[in-house]
Length: 138
Image 1 (tube, rainbow, N blue to C red):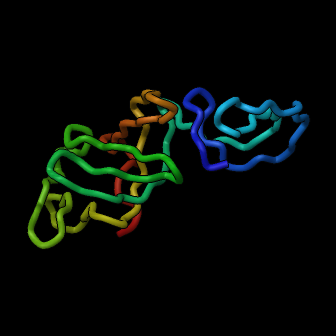
Image 2 (cartoon, rainbow, N blue to C red):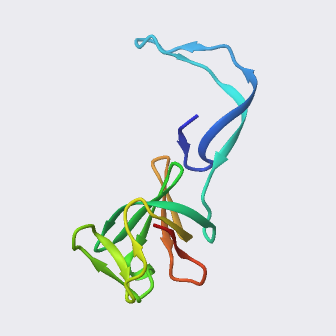
Image 3 (cartoon, helix red, strand yellow):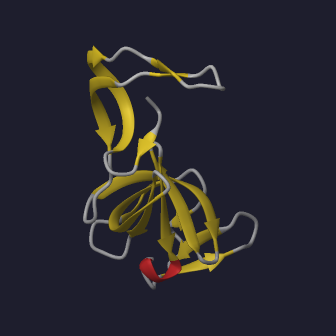
């Protein structure tokens, strides 16, 4: 639990253990290796999926948001043009009417537009540049 297998996603919860092979000792290390067969609940983002996330970091290139264990980057080019970056006080993206602010700890709804699996880690790119996406609550 709590690990990421790039092909299957993040293992959230092991629900049932089916079988365990007899272990083997790794020579020179003292480690034991077991093959365990189990059912589990996984979290894996897919291209085109809509997610509700919490913004964790904002900079002039875009922002990083989190949905559970998954970090998602939303580039400045995938933010609507009526939002501009402001570094005054708290870095954020402010709507041209000044009402909405995308800043740290606010909630956004985004769409996954790309995923990449590297070293058992899933990297995602998101967009808020479509209808019904963007700021949910500050």
